[in-house]
Image 1 (spheres, rainbow, N blue to C red):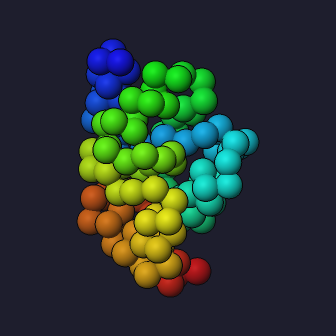
Image 2: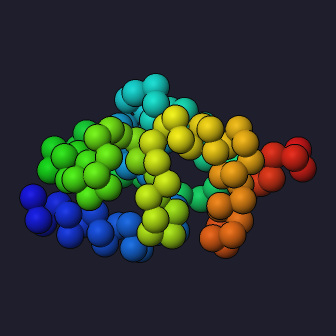
Length: 113
């Protein structure tokens, strides 16, 4: 498992926005992952995704790494943001746009559309 944790740490450190999810952005394998993909897509936020279904060690390791029991998990600039419910609430309140902007991540401001 420590090898999986090392790979998770490397991915989190190497990507401004990282989404651990079930499936891929083009083919999410659960509704919660799909919701986060839609939010990031709507905001036109560039991100890397990791399909936890491809590697059981990553799937379990990411839960230990964040001390968070579910997937999807969103990270911005190395910091754990949360799962689907938290990301959705932050998006609806405008807090997600603020977080991404303050992290220097390109984002389309929903108020500008």
